[in-house]
Each structure stands twice: as structure tokens, then as C-alpha cells.
Length: 369
Image 1: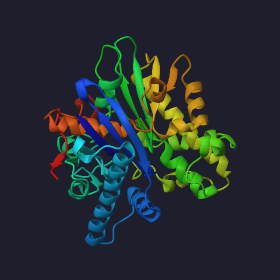
Image 2 (image 1 turned 120 degrees about the vertical axis):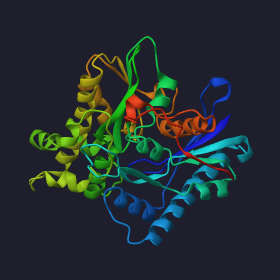
Image 3 (image 1 turned 45 degrees about the vertical axis):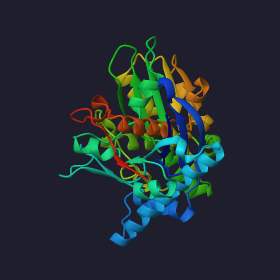
Image 4 (image 1 turned 60 degrees about the horizontal axis):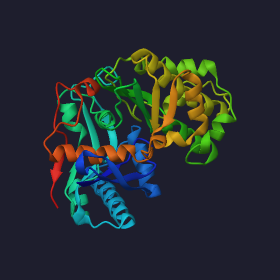
């Protein structure tokens, strides 16, 4: 019952790989790592994710295979480090890399909603010799859903608690919440930008790929007027279910509301405040009884962000999932290992109340080695 989960999110800051053992109904993380992207490939993926265009079908096909080779290399590195033979792994669950996310809803009024992740699973299965499950999101979109977030079902199975109202907050490139009321229906949705914009702005103005511990933001002051201009974006007023990505929130979106005289550190501080207020407002609106927020994702390493969340949620316990013994960096990769297991068992992986799909669906396509 060992599965591998592979995940690269909106920030494209690396491929998270997790080897998970689900024996006896448990969920035990055996080993995890983050496999780096080639710098040029990462740059192309980020550009595509925020609306850049491919020049040809040949470029698309090549990129699809390049991403798959990187995902396969991440799985192989994971097995080497864990000293586990590929024959001991039942399947890989590969999220792929999202290059465009256009689900239905007011944020996208196209007649044919879609979501597109690349990283050919045939290549992953061939390189690793392991059954590979991939393309999880498109079935949910076909069923009228957002295709995201898919992790709440895993959060509920792993971290639901009958004694308190909980929320799981993933601070990746985009922020998303899973609401776990002690006696109610699981819900989940994206809250808006998180690391993606802070990382991009930090790199643009400091040359660093991310704001280490939030030091750049801490050196600035929140611009209340700029914050309100960003918050006036209609996406924030949309009711759940909703999801988003770099197509909606990118550096041009940031710059469109600048007046041209802002201090870069103040903008960084305001981006951090935007992440915090959208999370806090979402919790107050949709689960005001929340007693505990468990945070995972790269944002947990930003101590300024974590403290700002605690300040914005008085009376609520804000912890990382690592404090409960679940690696906060590996959570999403673990979820895709779990989703692969669900698919092989013929069990649905989505939640209708989360994505808005017309019903539960078995997600993903299976590729034998």
C-alpha cells in the first residue's frame, strides 16, 4: 500500500514528492523531498501560467515531455533516498504542472471551461516502471466543477476532528481553505493570491526567488489605499465554489493598481496583508466558529506571514500541520498519492460541495508501465 504523490503548484518552486504508506487504513509519510526545476524550464512554466502563449504545437509537445521527465526524475530521486525499490510502489499520483486554469464561473465566461496540466504520464510510467495516475482535474471540470481544490477530501480524511471546528489553510502560490466543521459538510475553496505574487515581486526587486522569513515585507509598511484597490477586484466577491491561478493574479495585475511612486518594500508588505485579509475574511464569512487553523505549504516558512495570520485571527489557534506530525511541505504531494489510491480502488476523489461538480467522480487516468 505504498504510493508516490508528485505535486508542483502555482509557484513552480519545485516538484514535491512524497512516498506514503496507506497500510491498515493509516497514512504514514515514509519519505519526502523537493526536486528542483531546471531554471529555464521553470521560467517558461511561470510565463505560461500567467497568460503567456505557446508558439506552436511542437513547443507544447516538447514541454509536455520535459515536465514529465522532471516529474519522473523526482520520483526516482525519492526512491533512492528512501532506499525503496520501485516494485514496492503500487502507483504514482502525478498532479502535473498547470499551465492554464479556466473553469466555469464569473471569472471566466467562455463556453468551454477547461483546466490544463502538462507532464505526460506515459513518460512517467515508462521511466519509473510504476503505474501512474494523472489528469485528476479535468473530469471534475467536465462534471461542471472548478477542478479545484481537490485536496479537501484528503484533509477531511486525515485531519477531521469531531471535537472542534477546524480549517486547513494551504499557503502555496494561491491560498486555499478546507473547512472541517465538527458536525457539518466539508467545504473548500481558493482565497486568492499567496506566495505566487509575493515571490514574483520579491524576485523582481531583490533578485531573490522568495522573501526569506518575510524580511522584505517586514521592512515595508502596508499601503491601505493600495490594499483596497486590490480588494476591489470582483473575484474576491465571488461566492464559493471558486478557484483561481496565475491567469488571474500576476505581476501585471499588481502593477495595474500602482500609482508609480510606491516603495517596493511597501508593496511587498501590502501583498502579504492581502493574503492575510482574504484568508481571515473567508474564515469569518464561511466558518466563523473556527477554533483551530492548521497551515501547510511554503508559506509556513514565512514567519512574518504566520504572525500576521495569528494577529488577524484572535482567539483562534494557528499552527502548522508539522506541529501535529504531518510535514507541511509534503501535504499536497501526499494528497495526490491518496487520490491515486482512490482512483485504483474505484472511489471518487472530489467533493461536490467543494468544487461544485454535479456529483462525486472517480478522477484521473491510469497508465500502466
